[in-house]
Length: 586
Image (cartoon, rainbow, N blue to C red):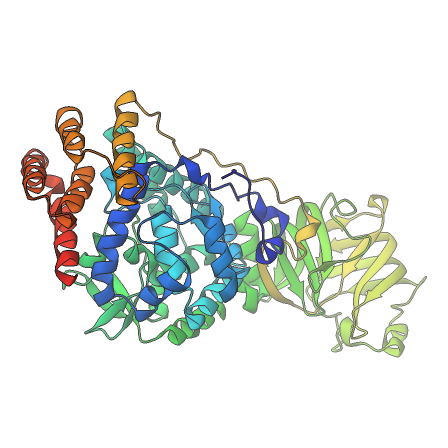
């Protein structure tokens, strides 16, 4: 298989800035050990989850074409996912939260294509294909949940971050990478965890992105559904963790009704969760999401929305009551009586209407920033946008007229009107001046020598959100991750072990029927005495084929491993139990 990225109609709709995160899955890079890890986790999970997961999970495994025996091939998954209106793409570990959610808004499942190390088979803080494909994908076959996920992405990608959020994202990404990587010094992990704890202590008031990320965690990642007394699992973090899926069902984990209060409950990705939230049904998730969305600047706008954008120090947009949208990095707002009366951006700024950039008002035209008054004219109850052509003429707001417009709060705009732009409803949304001076008291906000002054028209800010109004207004293909997932350099011994796994895999699939399992066991004992998973797979074959003597030898070897490595004894016992239960069922 080649390493190119296969496309389809859903992926074709993705904007260019999201495509920068997509990478080839490189399916041939998965080793036989990787496939064995996948197979072990899936067999153990499906056995247990068939009793405790929401019914959509087992049904979804079939609907999404996810095999228990093989790591899913993204191309094959996409051919099946398209029937339920979704697609999947491979990425490298964590991607920025806004991008992750925007993928969801386009009905695209983001899948970290790496797989956890055998040493971290129970749980890894790093996103991997077990978490994404075996956790997220099956549940989206449920239409109610799939719509919740899409809507979450649509709203979440508009959430405004703080300047510290991205720093925290990079720190979490770093920790997940070094924790999953083999041979990372323990002190490096301790330092990384301390850095995250310090960042979290100094986060001050949580941003919209931080809050909605909490909702995402307690639903999409770690959600329970049903009743407090008898909940079922639907969160991908639980569905993909053979340790936490069992742990969360015990009384040691507190179960709480899912309400908007979950917004303010933080989480630690490196530890099992002490409490979980239970939603009565999937429809309730959407009710809480809408309740939170009503608190976002996306819907409230106003002075607080402008201030959130300023604090983010990142590209964002405001929409005025006329529908005019201003996109850029907002750096200042003048306020009066708890209302924004003037807003200012710095650097490239674009103007749009209904998410479409206005002609001649791109980021190159407004490359040095944009500022405009907001509100009504002083002493006039009728807003400019609500004025008829006759009203506008009466107040000298007319082409080639020299006029001084004084707004409530003290902003003055003096100059000669060149022209105006109207929206589809006929309301004026932009007025252009020449020889224009804009002042606020003694402060000069715009000088005539700066060129044409474009004044946005709007009595208030109705919306403020992250990112540009028109995605084509800015070059968004700028993401450069601070570090990439660490790929281990395989030793000769590791490659030999992988070959043994491959031989057992080929035998199980009928590709090599003459394999001596006895020789495999001998080589394991002599050269790979600490490896347990291949011995479990070897026991499965001998058990199925009633090779009693060889089975006993394998079990003796596994007992030796358990004595030498007591920390993985439970994994061996669980693997043997699955084999024996499957045999009993047959």
